[in-house]
Image 1 (cartoon, rainbow, N blue to C red):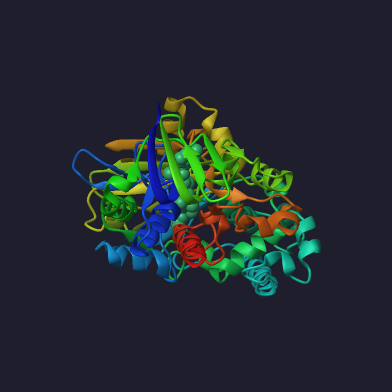
Image 2 (cartoon, rainbow, N blue to C red; image 1 turned 90 degrees about the vertical axis):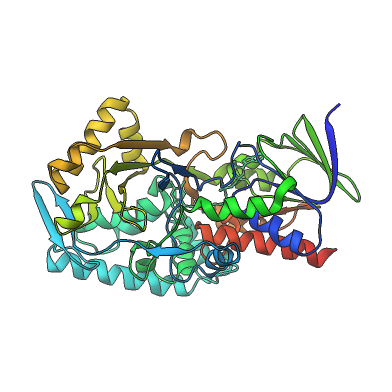
Length: 452
Ligand SMILES: Cc1cc2nc3c(=O)[nH]c(=O)nc-3n(C[C@H](O)[C@H](O)[C@H](O)COP(=O)(O)OP(=O)(O)OC[C@H]3O[C@@H](n4cnc5c(N)ncnc54)[C@H](O)[C@@H]3O)c2cc1C
């Protein structure tokens, strides 16, 4: 016989959305059980401790200055943050040339810089016309949702060459999927949800400004500790059955009978849960369409951040390469030195097809070329294939193909009977980010507290 627990609310998934929902519901005097498939909490946030105890983030890591919800949660549980290292020269590799620059704009042709700036102004202006809570009601929603991001970039006026390649790579990094298969309305909504396209791209004043002491997972760990026995790890939910006044959430080994459930799994994974009554076709189409793309995040760890003494920030880029973007992701103490290296979408897929030794060589060769010979000898080399992770399947958030947001967007947050939905994909402000996940958990908890 499966174990049976009664609770007011059953939360499915212990990423930041699920943990926040559970915390707010407990604070609202509801009894809660959290069922998490993995043997750890955090979901797309995965902090690993190295042999010397230093924490590094294999998944999400950075917080922007306006990410008030996650900063609030961090303060509540006594975790602090620090600024990402930005001092020194950034590097852009363009064919045989390596250009050094400081600030946001690399030293490429003035014409390319101007056309990028103009395209960004136009993007921000269009994004302002997208209502944050209901992007599908924008006056030009149907037109924008019929187009792909790739379609728009082609017509953006950005001159072809390294400028266009850089801009395309940066946008591909936001969605990680094929930009031919990503709705332009989704891009405008994302920009609206973060304030401007530059906020999404930037370190200082932008989405990559802050890191978390002890790793981004340390906040999740403390929230989970506070939840105590309410947390059940290694408990993948297989079915959710709704009755008139209750919902049964079942893992096979454990059944939770609750008055409400909050499902926080990435949308594409919701279809693997057997719902009774079954999910209607429109919801199934939405969840099947909302897939996340491939991205490789590789952590290359050195005894110390040697590039800082050489006058480099650690921020480098080369569109199309094994290390399309790198950032200094060292702990606040500066020991060890950590370079986080990313490749996105089709580039990540190509890179993943190499065998592990070839991949390591490709990354270390690229870093050596940019940062000098010491880059060839890391003490650790940590890869994470997020798209192969059974309980995530893609980075860093779902992207919506053309036609989906206008047709099915309203279902993202609409409860299905006693089942409420959270997760960064359901968020408006900070959509796709850790902060969005926290906000979505707070919103779902408030829905249930209001209902009961
Ligand atoms: C490589 C990478 C880099 C990123 N970088 C950043 C960054 O720097 N800054 C930022 O703000 N955001 C970043 N993100 C995005 C950020 O990590 C996510 O927005 C956020 O963590 C999503 O939280 P969530 O709770 O919505 O979903 P998740 O973290 O995916 O949580 C869902 C949980 O549900 C569990 N689950 C799935 N199926 C089941 C089931 N059937 N039963 C029970 N449990 C289930 C999963 O194991 C998971 O724990 C990054 C993401 C990745 C992958």
